Image 1 (cartoon, one colour):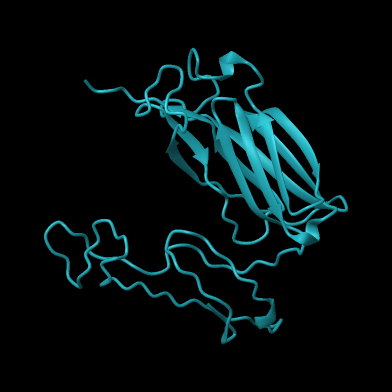
Image 2 (cartoon, one colour):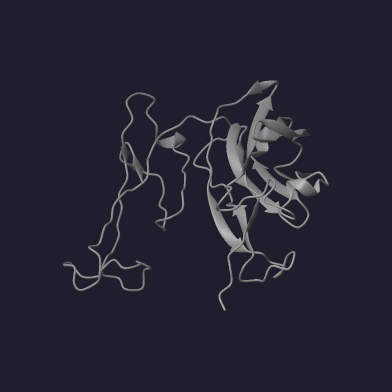
Length: 236
């Protein structure tokens, strides 16, 4: 990546976001950003799915596609900001494990955490930032069996009832929120305990939030959190 003709950094990998501090390359007038992407389609060691590694498609292989497929943008950020957020549900305990990383300049700031389900607030928290890393556990199910999937879906996530918790984070410095950003990404992972409520390891899937990869500042974040298991019928 180049800013005003000056090299500022590089990134390898086609599926993860990244960011660069370009302050030293700015002219504070009209700025020019150039992004150069190289995708060697003939390299057979790169994961490609069914995209063909030769110039022309053949048989069952798809025509290769390449290039920039996500937005590139410039954004002014505060020195005090959230750098990384990770939200992970613990289905067995009914908890949301939250990890926050801030810049050192955020020392003395306050992080506000709010979690809600279908408009109903279930968590509010204010964290005084003393060090760059903070970890919390929030008990979303609140010892209420009807919120779990013991009898029915409750508040958990399933394909038939894809329930989500809304999580809002606000970083305040001297009472003022610094910027705004929202983002959400999810993946499925097997229940690490193997079995849960008589469900086999193959049947129990835990839907958890991905580590939030941040392009820039995240002073205020609003995101949904999938919290539950996906049960699949076993075949004889």
